[in-house]
Image (cartoon, rainbow, N blue to C red):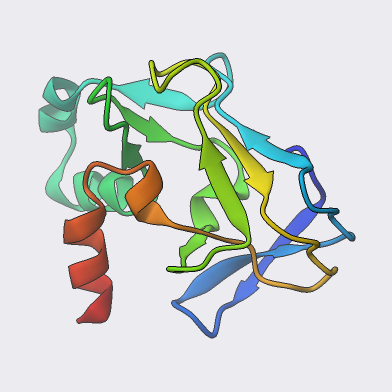
Length: 135
């Protein structure tokens, strides 16, 4: 669940991006998994989706490296793009056990700046996604 004001728009990185709609100071909690808000699925549940729906789901979800569950952000957090040097760090305050996964501003972020994260920090499918995006 996003905890800061954002907007989506065309990205110079890839397709659609998520942008800060306010100044965000370094260290601010910006996003967290909210189990009653974000959607979580076991891999076995994805077989029930049509091929186009499954592709769309996999594009915007991530597979948690510890639990193996797919998490689909319910809000526009699904539009975070990847950067090797992101302005948001992924943190697992409870030891990467699947609870309380959060995103913290790694630096001061200006309004209008694209919000980025490093997929390798939280997505067990990051290698496949990054190869696909590279084309």
